[in-house]
Image (cartoon, rainbow, N blue to C red; front, side, top):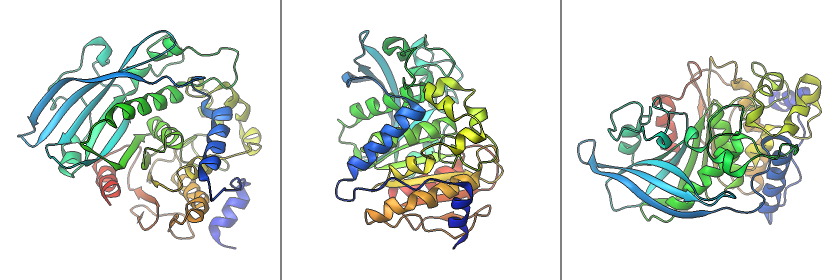
Length: 369
């Protein structure tokens, strides 16, 4: 028995559900249902789609002339009427379709588009805090969805789209903030999908930390995202929960607004051991597509070893669908190691909890491969 298999058995990690190879969509929906019921919550009872979308501001010839910047307003239907989402796009100035990153991102310092405080100057750090020029120089477009423009990251549901949808206060499975953010990203994609400038075979959802958790949940539900990237997503993201060091369910369940109330049942070591699932289920829901998990060697709170272990544990689904799975050593990784041969890619960047140019360079190569 190899090291990884022994480690999975030592932690008591449950086997993946039986896979339906002929119709993997059934299997994927079962996994989504598990996480809807136990972790992230169920969204709207029926589909609320995009009413309209438009480019409200455009700069043609930004960054010296070879890039286009666009601010998109996407109006969506809700139980309480229309609501405006915003996506901030930077893309190459070319007639050819290009790969697209849709990134779940943190609030900019000015407070949000809804307050009319986004500066159109692309060189102001409040616009992105992202290496958007390098990303576009790499041949990709990026659309930024700021979480605060959807609903604030706070333990109330009296802000943003949460007001329009509400939360079933007596429902144990009613969606939390991660669910709202993920739903909004799919609505952004509804709109951007109508443009011919994006290569629909290379559309990636990406996020860091809590936004990395959100990116995984987005990708698990919406298969139009052909590529999914989780950067330092840790507990209730890419990391295996059983046997995890750093942040555990006892910690993360304190951030109750991210999840449905059912997740509180798994707070603590004993309760975690009795979960009928673990996070490798979520990674396995991306089988048949491309998945990248990025870790940082000093990010013990996220626990790189447990993120790496989930990649191994999810690999059988990718292999069952004819993919290469996770091709990596039968041991824990060392700082600086990268594994890019399979349909699950991974790197352990030296350093701490962040998403920097080291990460982005690899993610650009991943999306363009």
